[in-house]
Image (cartoon, rainbow, N blue to C red; front, side):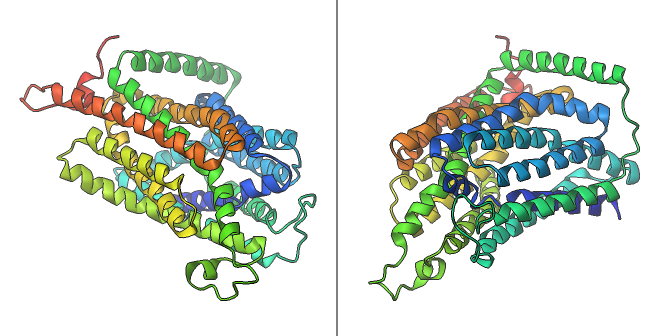
Length: 453
């Protein structure tokens, strides 16, 4: 099998495996006695684990081998799913989070690096952008298919006990399916991925760890010395808070709306969207939640298209485009917090994905323009860490707030946080317009990225 086919197959199946339980994972934890605060707590452990291991795991992949590191990540992911299946208290879910976070950190970039190296070796001169764009499309297909599968599975196993004390329930069967698919990913990786690099010796391990320390120090100095980078990292952190709030709280929020919208015995003739999606079982709720989540992926694609047109309309003012899309996301969260109907809430939840996906490309364009090519990889890791830092902060603050007050209150705070972030992009836009280039045109943030602190 070709390098392209191998990468597309393994990567998309891995995303499929990971996303199967996503539509019901928080509901499953709640059915086993966890509160929203506790869900946020083990989510914070997961995020913190990734933050701590993000950069060291990259050095491990470079020294130990990309295939070996990815296989280790997949094995740990399978073990994490086994732990999740058997977790019935906070301790069990924390152990799951530690293992799952370690797996995600190890897998981050390992298979991607293997693919780029193998493609350039076997197809010298091949353009990377079309190949990576195709990979993104296959991954989206895997995400959508996994979401639909996870939404339908509980209905197929509705005969299982729904008691939270049971290991196998209509909701937990999604975790079993995820584990089976993860085992398939392990087998395919072992059979199809060819990475002949020998295992590193102990000296290489030490050199790799020393290199991580040096690179991290360089990245910190670069960020401290550049106002645009500081603003962009702050923006990434704020959006990380929004992303965590969305991913953690959407399931119980919509589950509550589904319960309120479900027809009672006195209302037998419900039609339309509610009648099509709702019933009287947890399986029906899972189908509805899968519809909500699956739709959000499609809306994300639309957001990317909208961002391209917006930046073109604004004549390349990426900072202004990112700020406007950030404002749209803040508005969507603010309105979502006030919704009591299923249809309106679904539309606004999708709008948050439209805005967040659209914001990403001008934000990344600004960031890549502000970093030197020699430090691009590590600075992208720093950007990722900023997002995870926001996610960790949101897990510690906003999920307890949702528990103590309401999910709507937490989303209202999230809207305010995002609105605050708009000012960061307005400042970036002012910097870009105030920095003339030698040809008389205005420069982007890259022109001011070496500004001294």
